[in-house]
Length: 208
Ligand code: B1M
Image 1 (cartoon, rainbow, N blue to C red):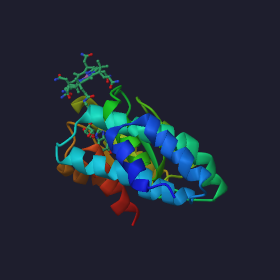
Image 2 (image 1 turned 90 degrees about the vertical axis):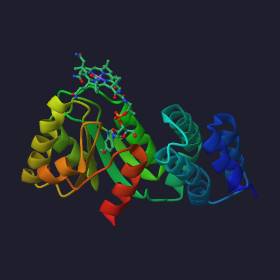
Image 3 (image 1 turned 180 degrees about the horizontal axis):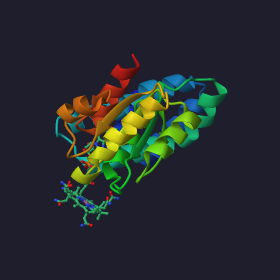
């Protein structure tokens, strides 16, 4: 049987080729897709998340690891669907209206996927109306809002208020360089995360 440590190590190193090869070999050997996902891919991304929070690795390493995970997921995904494996949770993430910054938001999306969430990335410059429309379509448990400009922070408040008024039951979480826990409390967000790895911890705690 293929050793899942080899797969998690490949994700940690960002070694796409090995990640895909080990995933294919494990599937060929009949290993349960859920085990490949949990003990291999998610285990590797968890390590990267912990190292990122501790400033032991930086954004480029996270992106490279996330890419290795993504390539292996392309091989594994049909098997997970066949096996009826449910995602850890469902999230939807966007950058609020007027704001085009997406590098941090993309990292949050990647880390959530890396943790086993199904994630709808609804892009940048997303109006409150579009958040509501997409939430009705995707039915997420968690809605993430990102903002990088002090001038677009009020769009977070507007969006959260509009989501509540529209009766969307999902928990909200916010993040981005100018955002703080105090601001999250002020606008009634479900939570605030300072970085992408913490966003995963927060999302998990919000759905539990
Ligand atoms: Co812009 N920009 N920018 N910019 N830009 C900043 C944010 C700025 C601080 C630069 C500066 O003046 N020093 C400044 C904002 C000042 C302010 O409001 N206080 C600024 C400005 C003013 C502008 C323009 C207005 C400039 C102009 O045109 N005059 C303009 C606005 C455009 C718009 O959005 N309408 C603009 C444009 C741009 C570019 C298009 C050129 C480009 C964006 C490219 C892109 O995103 N595709 C850009 C960039 C790259 C930056 C800087 C240099 C880097 C931002 C970044 O990607 N950081 C930035 C200065 C800086 O931060 N040093 C700056 C890396 C990223 C990984 O970090 O996004 O913070 P970050 O995400 C982190 C956490 O915040 C957190 O996790 C991430 C990873 O750990 N996080 C979340 C983020 N979202 C989260 C969501 C969560 C949880 C955690 O839950 C949902």
